[in-house]
Length: 264
Image 1: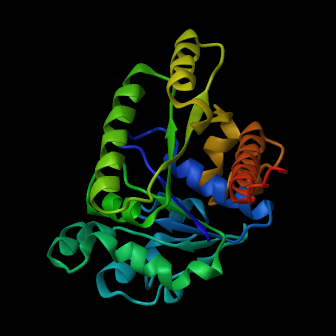
Image 2 (image 1 turned 135 degrees about the vertical axis):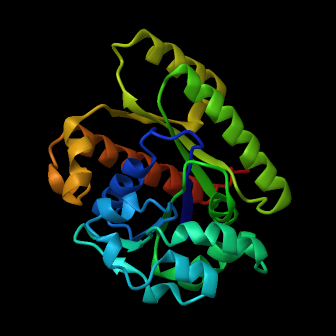
């Protein structure tokens, strides 16, 4: 079974798109087949993967609104992962989906058609709760939540968890929190450490041990249309996302391992 992650946080500026692009590249480096779905009308994950959103003939908009075969819109990247790209057209889909049948499960239907082609599907959600985010949460089997260790981030996290619980009850009972990822992490900051301790206490092993540091190379890479791993493999940001990919794949390998019966 492939892993479908919605990378979501209703608070903007937490490194959500950075996480999607760099996690996709790092999972490929771990020999996984990866599809990145850009579900944000800003198209930042598309551009950050080296795809010019202004030249797209087909995009995730067409897949959602006309139920087109996703393979027609998927673009391969130099970093080894595929992208179902987005541009400003996707803003119209937020409104158009409201009048469509199965509006919450359009993305799920698209992924079902191509799921066997990939080991991991990573969905970059917009920084708001709208029909696009609902589609991502209905399609996913896990939510990866990037967040900064600051006070207001905790408030946003609470709202997102409530949303996840509602989706579980109404549309996707298999949905769970895959993990909490601390981004822009600076251990010299006392507030960072305080919030980190609260996250550890509340989420336990759902909090990734990997932390993503503030890193200049990580911030520069999108302007070159590359993940940090392609832009500067030795940068602290690239190394951190490689560590995250390793932590994720080890978790999944452990969870999928059959239980050993005790000797009688």
